[in-house]
Length: 176
Image (cartoon, rainbow, N blue to C red):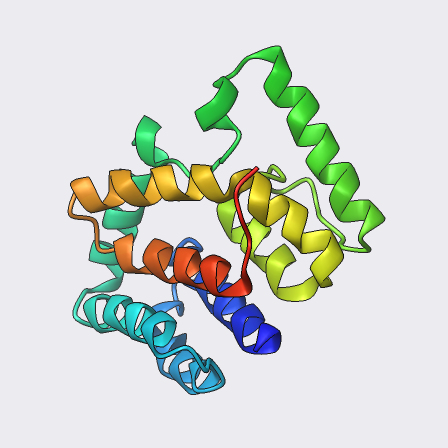
């Protein structure tokens, strides 16, 4: 079951990544990978997003992504920003998260901050349980808050966050 959920996290990470040229064309391959997801509700949520994405042009996908995640203070994917904004405490939390990744053997680059949701989901997809569960627990409420904002905005990205939360709940993680 956990491996199936890790596949869901990996697929969600990809679906939340910037839709650069070629991104849309890989969605069919991703659907094949999603067959390994045993949880029907998780798979259905991800499939709902893919159906919407396939009905958009590359330009529409890029515009929607930028509008949703780059310009929306309440819908940005930097999870620690919700707690501290640009305060000093955020830097400490980012450093702790980066150290946790490193201690877990998960290599990150300086391309993205460690609290970037697609990166966090990639960590969940690859880390062992004892390393990923505390992070899932710590940031579950932040993911829930982002989900609510996307739902209220009628965002096409809402089903992805729904799938992530279903996967975290199925994993059995409680919030801190």
